Length: 369
Image 1 (spheres, rainbow, N blue to C red):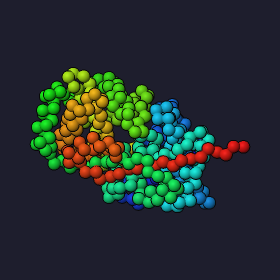
Image 2 (tube, helix red, strand yellow; image 1 turned 60 degrees about the horizontal axis):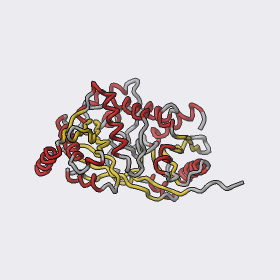
Image 3 (cartoon, rainbow, N blue to C red; image 1 turned 90 degrees about the vertical axis):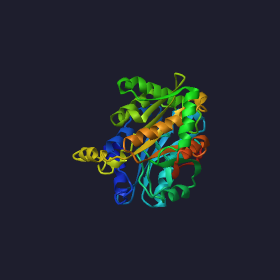
Image 4 (cartoon, one colour; image 1 turned 180 degrees about the vertical axis):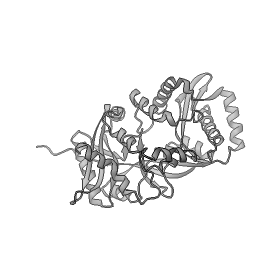
């Protein structure tokens, strides 16, 4: 892909492909451009190439990103490269051309597996929606038509891992769980506190430490660099609600944290991907109508995982969100085989209503000569 015109075409393609889909939420173009910008901190430890597919008339009919993520390779040593930002017309030959191009690009860099979709990694939007096509995605979750699975599986990709999203209705916390939580809090001297915006920089450092330590052993996990964390914090600070960013302390020691965001997609739906000229006004107006939240992350350091700290964080988020008038929400995503966390969410009444899938396909090294 060459030049600014191609980059604009890359960013614009979904707005044409999804214009008649009432469930799609148009992202802000500036946010997509920020991710693709070579100055984004992700690119400090990764090599990325963007590709466009055009038909004979020159119209863009598909796009894809190829990603060699050195941070992933250093963590997992699995020879996996990634594809992301995949969009295509409903034409298997277009998808096959895109996947073949990425496969050759990854193979030329010595990689043996093509995995995706991930835009760009598990720390950003990832997974293909394969179940739950009857509702729009929540903030920072992907969306695609059902037939994308046909395009991907038709090329020979096989399931690597499923990611589960849970739906919650504000029906109150069961009395039994309240009693159990109270006993655990007393026994282990657990305290839950909200984010202190006056110490935002220090709080971000605490979150960074907890995130990289609590998720260290998770499948596919990639530690976030200081620059990535600072960039994400800068993006989220204007929309963070302190009562929805919680820390757990066990006997005075930092043990875990949880982060939820108001579902900004409620407002983004009406902004057509732009802040100007009127997008900001629609954002403010519909932002007042947000009645849902998404729990993005909830983690506890390994030595505190059987204390009840995770359950207390979850319960506190639930209560704080409902106190702000939020009537429902989503916890996403959870690895399909993270049975301990899945059981805890289901005990709170969570319904596994959406599934996102990551796929793998072996790739061959280029022929010698």
